[in-house]
Amino acid sequence: MGLGAGRVTWRRFVLMLAPSLAALTVLAAGMADGAVPASFALSGRKLKVSADKLSGQGFELFPGTVRSVDGRRHAVVNLSMRSARVYGLCQSADVDTPLGRFRVRLAARDPGRASSVTHLGISATSLNADVDFGSVVLNQDAGTLGGGSVLRGRRGDYGLGAARFTVRDVTVDTWMMTGGSFRVDGLRLDIGKDVRPCF
Image (cartoon, rainbow, N blue to C red; front, side, top):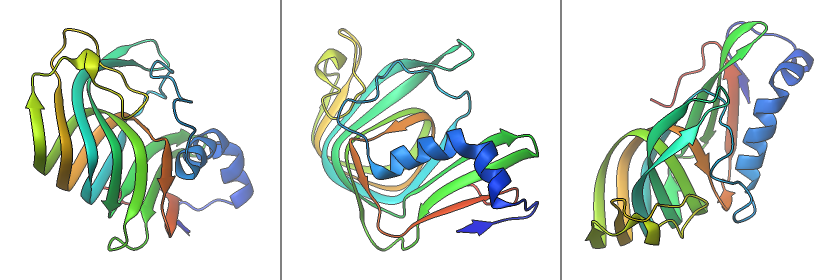
């Protein structure tokens, strides 16, 4: 576990970052299926999520909105995956503290070792990746999608569904990432002003 420039004592970090660390701990430990409602208030800061490769079963894509804690609504594209193996997982976010802005970064230590996730949901504002879909259906009614995560599509909206997927070189700006369960062997947490973002 590393600290970058602008070091402070662990006690002060714990006091300042307890809410953020608690949320990240819940994420890393895994959440009960459906325990996080899709309408919960977001922090107001986007996350950066990247991965070298994801592959699995049950990929779905459909439009949606999220609401941040300041009451504003944001248009997103919801990505839902029933199960996936993830290589090179990384998540970073900037957090404001009484000592200034710091970056929190969670990453798998060994990018060659797969992490596993079930019922993954991502509310994205941008996504870049190379994709390979199997048994894909375009323009599926979004109201029939969302079974793979807590995110749900609306009836009449556009949707995309695929039975199988492989996604490489993934970078995502997102307001929210949820999962029924995450298993990451060798998780590294870094906090500091000079900690690199995931991309």
